[in-house]
Image 1 (cartoon, rainbow, N blue to C red):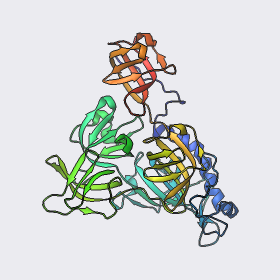
Image 2 (cartoon, rainbow, N blue to C red):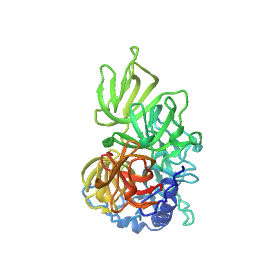
Image 3 (cartoon, helix red, strand yellow):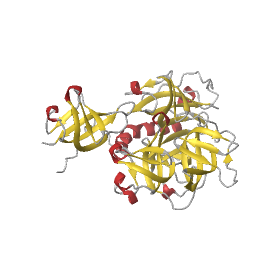
Length: 444
């Protein structure tokens, strides 16, 4: 008996990058044109904003309030170009790729014709390698031949870096997740799958070598995947995560549940700036010995912003002090003068945030902050137990709860009982102990 796929109202069910990209382009297309056009056509605007190097009263004080920005409008930050003909735009964006041809991040298109494209180890990549869902960082400037009809920022560098490259250990279809290299990887409706993995999560099997791009969520002990692809059979395994343990003398470290050790008298390359609690990138020899990975090298891989640029970050909150002081993917954010957008009350450890502002000596002075809820989870099957007074039931081992705002189709909450077949769309609560239902379709 096939359960119909539930409709997803736009107000509460964003479907992932493929469906969000057109909406972002509508919102940000005019913003990008205004950003670049204003920059190329009006030095006075740049001076009013206090652009570095313009002699117009700019400030490097991290405590100085950033220019006000009406979301989703971006304002230019940068300096006058060497020809003295206008301002040279400096933009830094860290986010998954929305689409290619042109490369688009968070709705802003980039000209990558002359870009230096590299992977997480600094090795050059061909432009054809870039695919939607890959997480990357772009440094860009405005093209000299700017045209309002083609508002493309010119990318100088583009770095694509996966979170994990290694074998699948186990798959848990009930929670839309799998484990690899000791890490829990969560698959969402917005996760992009390479053509070789057309079956989605069902195509994953233990032992399969994968590349995983995504967002690191240290508070939740997970990687939220934005793209999955088969990894080459040869080459080192890779893991990016928070360093939990390090013994430089023995060459032993731990990232999450993964233990890695030196092997055969070889001395792994451990960078001087590597420290417990920091985000690192470890290269591992293929294969496990005694349940441990073999460490080849490890270095710090925290995100570092270029100085004095207009920056936009999309990532997970990795440290939370207050709505005005937190960190995204390890980057410290001062939001004391920021406009807090919709959903900002949901800002917390592990939340997915988009922050725009100006970078000063590694600190991001935010102009706008927006929190994007995790994409909904879809689950269907037969209820094993129900507790109507508590508005909950158990489906495939997961506790599902409903509320007055839950939309029911096919039947009411009175029909929810053991052996009843249902399909649920919902979101995890903060500690991921239960699924909060948005829609419940009850099989008659």
